[in-house]
Length: 110
Image (tube, rainbow, N blue to C red; front, top):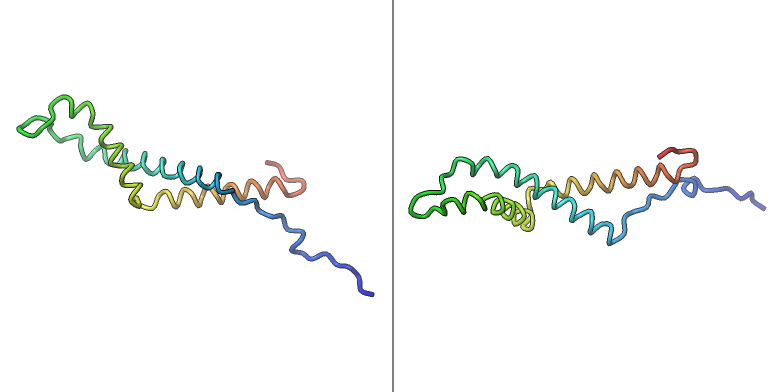
């Protein structure tokens, strides 16, 4: 008869991966972050543009410009963005895996 040995792979903790709902929420959060970042980057481009003239929108254009910039940023993200959401999402998954692994290890503090 042979001795029963425990495989080392059985002793390593399994990393909980986020479910479909968690992944979708992470993706949405990462895309909102990218849209916010793009909006902040686009704002200086429009600060010096005058709203008067034959085709300008006057005061209303100036008042609503921030909403237009936010929507431009959201559209940019919807059509692929600049890749920031992908980086943010992979970092969120890595951090969640580390936290999950720390919680499953005996004697680990969270």
